[in-house]
Length: 211
Image 1 (tube, one colour):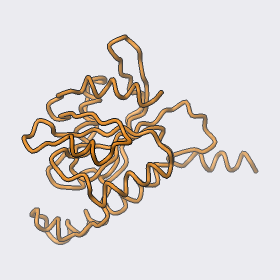
Image 2: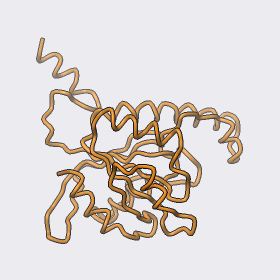
Image 3: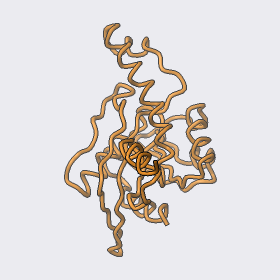
């Protein structure tokens, strides 16, 4: 019977019987915060290839995407290897009419809304498999949102180590101090995933995160 359950769980995205030798680092956050852009930055820097598709339209990433065996190095030559997991943007409400405003027809809009809703559910489920999480926030937006509170609440409930990446610091409206005030319990690093600004500092923070 035990072997039966091992085979059964072995077919799932996560296996509760497996050893924790496959460290999973998840990228979480609201839509259009820059998760996929950061995933691409990490993979381009260390693997020489991009990982995810990005778009100005919310919920471009609607399925869990994972890149295994990503190895980064710090200034002292120490290595850190993990599976990088890019997740769909978390939202408390997804309305197909929002996609209509972006120029999609009704059929496309409803399809994307349905896929995005499933993506949010999957992302929350996958939290149970994460060893550490980077919450990617748009530093130009108010961090005191229901979505951010929901994400942080889920992470705190699971006692998952968290690093907050305040993204888009290249923009004039970016205000990392507001994010620091909103989440004083976490380490926060300002970055521009698009242009690679302060990513070396981000990588150093990753080593501290997984201790």
